[in-house]
Amino acid sequence: MNRFGTFAAGLLLSTALSTAAFADTITMWTMEEQPDRMAAQEKIAADFKAASGHDVKIVPVTEKDIATRATAAFAAGDLPDILNHTVQHLLPFASAGMLDAAAASEVIENLGAGSFAAGPLGMASVDGETVSVPTDGWTQLVVYRKDLFAEMGLEAPTSFDAVQAAMAKLHNPPNMYGFVAATKIDETYMMQLIEHISLAAGYSPVNADGSVNEDTSKLKTVLEFYKSIADASPEGDLYWKQSREMYLGGKAAMIIWSPSLLDELGGLRDSAPVTINDDPTTKELAGNTGFVTVFSGGDNAAGAAYADVRYLGITSDANTSVAQEFVEFVVSNGYGDWLGMAPEGKFPVRNGPEAGSSEYQTLWSTLPTGVDRKEPLSNIYEPSVIADIVAGLSVGDRWGVADGQLETASKMVNARVMSQVIRKYIDGEVDVDGAAQMIVDGHKNL
Image (cartoon, rainbow, N blue to C red; front, side):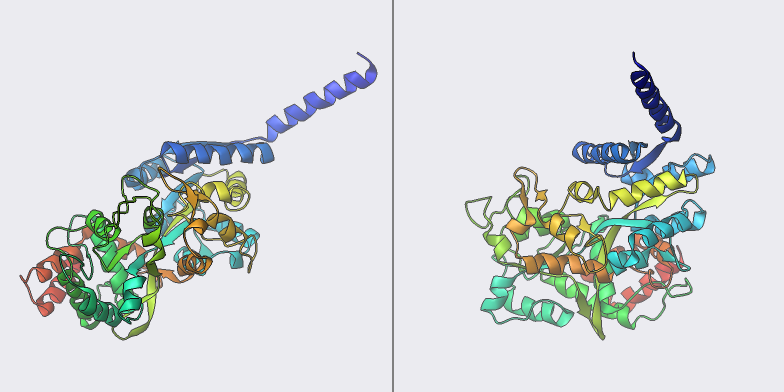
């Protein structure tokens, strides 16, 4: 070998040793544990390694176990570098010291806070810091038959009054039900509807100081509206399954559902077929459907949007700099792959790489969605519909967020006091005043 060849070989060996010396391996726990989603995350990790030299070990953890496992790992000083978690875990994890708020805040600063939707950032804000980095989310939707509304000259169901006016005109069982509301008390779906309706009315069960809200005026508005939509629903224990089936079958004028319905409305899932005609792949129903994100009730004219957001938290045990690099990579270069795991339920919380840009939103709308057949949402819905649905994340809210009481509010959600009492009220076992007081007392006893 000549001197140049010897030098080149030595340089390559030196570079390889140098890269190995500075390459690290970090671990991310993810709730996205389905095989196809794991494959997408492994691809992101591989692309990150190619760009940075660092390895990322992706470990699946079932969503219902994430809090228990994280708490145990924290006690043992063995947290992963990154935790994929929901909005419900934000304050519990942060207050326990599991999350490195300074590290997450630096990521947001590096990427530009203006490039993120305000709602998801606000949910993660504690004492001026962002405790975890939002990656994706969805806003619950009032889904309605805009063709029937147009025929009857009805306003879009953006308020309690508009919903009730529409039910009065469209409720004609068994051919058409005005609404399909949740009444099955042991299903999370019912509490999602209750919280959505409560936010619309400006009611929260928890005060700014963490105490139970004993003012029942807005609570009674929530109770009376919920009873009205239950009265316009089929009998029985209803949850997400019946509401979806009834709407896809053309027998419901309105439902409240997550955006996971978007691909099903487009005829892309055989296990949830559109049955308004003989073609389960028809897009007719999708074209005749309207969506409302910001919903109002009572004297709360501004209304609200119920949002569920997912985050990547950099933990207190992390290799901080590498974890920050990876999180930044996920919501930039790897963002298409991340959102592509389930575009119908993963709306972008960054519309683009900088404030005012819509690059990521446009990319998201072109990602294939569906189960048995795949198409981009932009093939099924008008651009204005997609923009309106995504825009809901900017004002997305949850009980207790504005006052830093999300942790207390989450306990109330999990206890399901309101769903149990509302079912009693629907069934006529208690009047509205008694139901309101039972809810207050039940929350005090948690």
